[in-house]
Length: 463
Ligand code: SF4
Ligand code: SF4
Image (cartoon, rainbow, N blue to C red; front, side, top):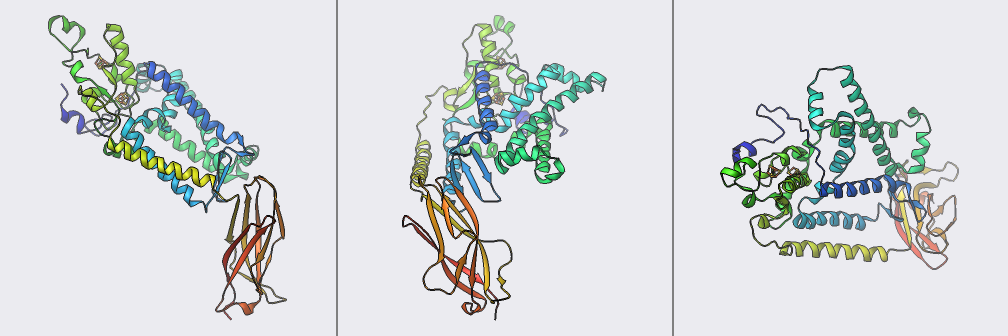
């Protein structure tokens, strides 16, 4: 008989001496597993294909951090678009609140990369090469023979190949697909940075999916820690119907003593990837993967009893009360989420068709021309034309000023959807500077009457 102390004092995967208990989950696919498989492969396909598809002439998603340029499905954002960053982050945070309060840990079981990669990529490779859970347990305990080395080598080889694809795709999101393909066709030592990053990512995956596995969810994941705050007795979870299942007893015992529907076969525990027994109630380690639902349903089918002894339900539902999805917290989270989405849509639709950014160049602060004694400050001008027609721009200093703008392209032409980045030099006489500083106002004008101005600080010699 399991007591509260037995399962709450330590994690299931750690024994009383503090050593890790390796989990060998039994493979027992059912209707939920098949649906999750479709969802997981769809998510994998999206992840692997997004950098390779072209939307409005650009890569599907590109996170170009060095150039502070971020492309999402054809829409380009810059580092100055902080309002969108705020709205997206706030929206993601609020989605977490909203979906957790309604659907519990649905993210963990269905869409978390940890689950998707482990359960639908790395574990299938492991099963294919090393066999069932009992065969894997036996193999791990067996001495190192040629057969064991061959199987381990094959498994880790295939897993490394899968990790390489995942890591290279991750890189394509950051450096762009064309540069990535170029680097791949070259020697690794000519591109040591990306090559090193690929190796680091592969190493992290080898550690995570080859060894650390469910411990990430039970020990490290912060979401697992605070989800209990976000959930209430009406939130969806994977739970065991104690009323119906207890007192549990073997099938034979039913003939002599009245028992509940649980025949104590232990299959729900054998299939659990975190090693827990869901019959002990809701636990932090449960990632709501539904494996125990499938397992128990198969037992109930075999016994001719109704499915759902373990099922998706809420604490209230499992206690025989009415389940209610619409609660005040769901309305509040939903309303905030709705407002954030509305502001995001409004802002996107009312973005200026022309984006302009002027930033100080990260080189020296200023240069003094030897012949004329003029001071030159370097900036970088970035322009994006999000309108549907070509635009012609001119850069100049606003008003009467002794300073002037010098760019390699004095008249800039941008076609629809085009971006341009050019160096912008501001040349000013030394007489303009007071204590090494001067202020000017740069102006960007276009042929349609569009005008953008920005005040810039110039640096020069102190005297
Ligand atoms: S699978 Fe179902 S019947 Fe078997 S032990 Fe678990 S709850 Fe009981
Ligand atoms: S208890 Fe069930 S749903 Fe929770 S992690 Fe284990 S198998 Fe998955």
